[in-house]
Amino acid sequence: MRILFVGDVNGKTGRRMAAARLPLLRRERGVDLCVVNGENAAGGFGITGEMADELFRAGADVITSGNHIWNRKETADLLLHEPRLLRPSNYPPGAPGKGMFVAPTPHGPAAVINLMGRVFMPPVECPFREADRLLGELPPEVRIVLVDIHAEATSEKVALGWHLDGRVSAVLGTHTHVQTADERVLPKGTAYLSDAGMTGPADSVIGIKTSIAVRKFLTGVPVRLEAADGPAQLNGALIEVEPSSGRATSIERIIFREAGQG
Image (cartoon, rainbow, N blue to C red; front, side, top):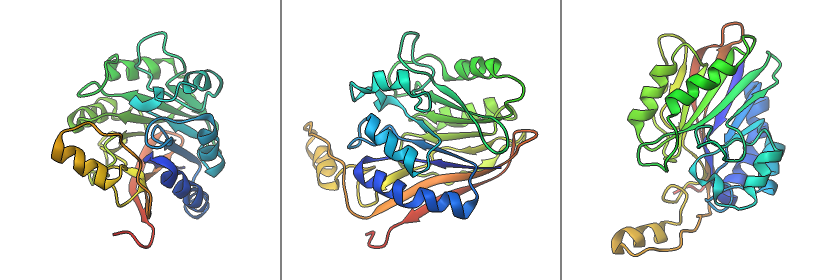
């Protein structure tokens, strides 16, 4: 079984790239399940129902998110009516929506879990204990499990990978928008990557217009951040999983850049 995970889709440029490349990747790589982090789809901050539909039409089976999930006020209602759109499961009780979805695939049911880290991030419950709780709720026939850990600190992501090794098929990090090169299959069969990267404007500062980001660093004065445009990139990972056991057999980083990138 092949799972495609796509790093944070950023703004209009990221949505355009997802629409152009996801159908091709699904067909060319024989993808059985496609998971896309879409929390930056709306100009870099949040996601709307229309944009979620764009990503589903492009080929996403499940959309994960992170700390920007609440940036658009309409998203709270959307989370109540679209189970394929996830918010981090370890938000405190009472937050709308859910952080886990079990998707049908040609190889049986596959669970997608969305968590958020606590180091340098908004206050949430413990992602380690929340992962344990969610895994305890899954029926035994759900052997394929993918975890999106939306976190700032690499150490927290790595620790979660080891904590879940052998219990989930893959632990993939999001949030930093910079793809890491530490992909591996851990000893007990869990594929791991600290950050899947970003799908969006290549000539940018993690998706933001370079002139604006540089000015903010130079002056320290708050500015209105704007998503960049121009040539795009798609970052992600392709994981191969043995369906009968749920163990990963390989993980490959996906890096695609449009012509014209600086």
